[in-house]
Amino acid sequence: MVFQEGGLNMSETAHGQAGEVVLSANGLVKRFGGITATDNVTLNLRRGARHALIGPNGAGKTTLINLLTGVLEPTEGSITLEGADITRLAPHQRVRRGMVRTFQINQLFDTMTPIETLALAVSQHHGLGGQWWKRLGSTPEVMQRCDVLLKQFHLAEVMNQPTNMLPYGKRRLLEIAIALACEPRVLLLDEPVAGVPAGEREELLQTVAALPADVSVLLIEHDMDLVFSFANYMTVLVNGAVLTEGTPDQIASDPRVKAVYLGHDEVVAHG
Image 1: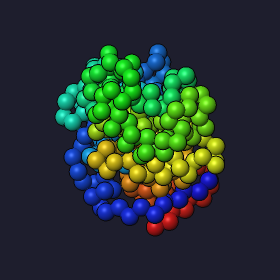
Image 2: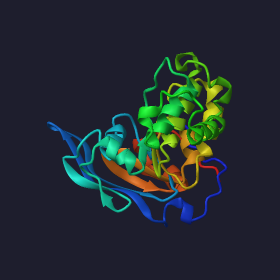
Image 3: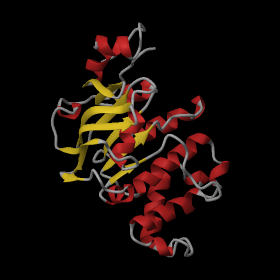
Image 4: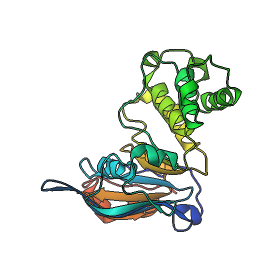
């Protein structure tokens, strides 16, 4: 396997070494009976960061995301979002506070079209959830936002097609568009290119790279091309614990990452 760092030119401040912490996990532990899935994890996501969470299968990445988003409650530790303790908040309360996630497995309504799906998401975000069924276009601010999202995520040409008829890459784009409809300040992307055919990946990769700069992103991904072209800071999990963290160059040259994550394969970083 080859690690490749893409063409992003990041300043030192963009490398996660400066900037306000917007999301913090502090000593998170999650036990399932005698199994420790998350072992004293501390992680800081800084404002505007492009932070990747990587590690081999079973490292505890999805468990950590489930803790951060409230799907699971930690056995020990705490979580803060923009300085407020959210450790015991329900998932929907965290969304209201500006933290939104996408899922590794598709979560869309098959019979709804992209425009209908986004109209529902935007209406809900603006407190108009009880009126989403009104004729599309009857709420100008909702439709204006939908139009922006459809163009931003390359969905305008398929906006009236049922979701179950869309190519899988378009469905993944729609999922990210739904997340952006909630106007998050923190976005957690759980394997956005998982299952996407090779011919549909480039459009999705470009769209992920073009996410708003003011949104702090935590990315879980096995695709190293995406990780190294997107991330400016990385955390490596192994057996539920943080092995190391740093810039892509630091991670690519770390012998522990080579040994534990890649075995004896070569790691190459391109500046």
